[in-house]
Image (tube, rainbow, N blue to C red; front, side, top):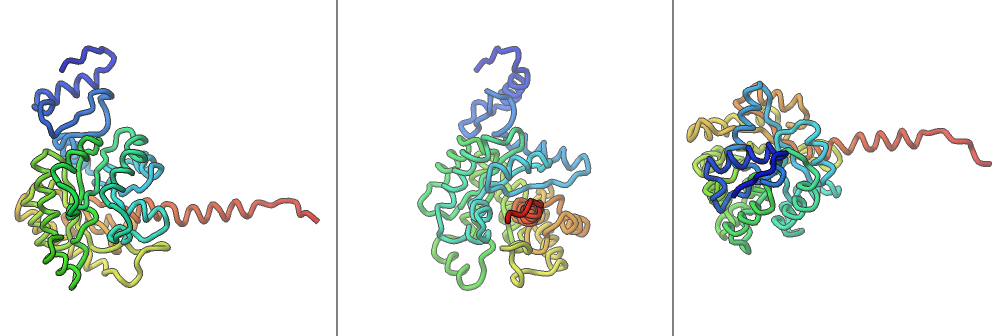
Length: 318
């Protein structure tokens, strides 16, 4: 493949880089030779970007986005990556994020649709990750991951995830072919296909499994996010518990591979101050926010702005 267009220096440099690293000949990599910038990024490029963030002493910030407008302004705010999954659509439609775990739609199709028509067309440079429902029995996962690559995503995450399900229902899922092991196998397959991987885990055992599968980044999920109009109230944990759980996941992941990055997420970790506290007291190197970013950024400011407009004085009509 030859590109001989002088104005596209970034494009030419990118293609040269990919050719030298044998990426252009791989059936699993779809570089963007037409613009020379933006999605999709290779796994190597993703890791270089994140390590560069850490080398500057900055936290890695990932953000869930359920709409194009959310994604556009998350990028303007400087996030390191965006994750798209079906909960974002429900969340920004006014329902709780847990709706993404229910049978209210095809989770994989929803994520692909948000990516194709809302987020990927409007972001410029920020990497976009696809949330994959790995236990979907109707999909050949190798085939679906090829579609994810072809769509232009730069990696995968495991959502909806059964890691956040517990009790008898979790046992039922495990015994009927819809286990968390399927999610670990999806991450291993994605790693084999040279996709960047950033899965959720809840327990140290899951963290070990994901690290062994080749996960690049692990998100320590400590529960559904508190706060706002549709956040949980009592179904949460203390900040001390969140810190302990996050560090246990860090320890487990690092017992397998020292290079795994761990990010915090959920539960009482709602504000930048909360996220900073967890990073200070654990080995986490950043935070992934979904409700805490796009939902909370809308709820109070939109209500307050509406109240300000409503307070505009007008002449009384008699």
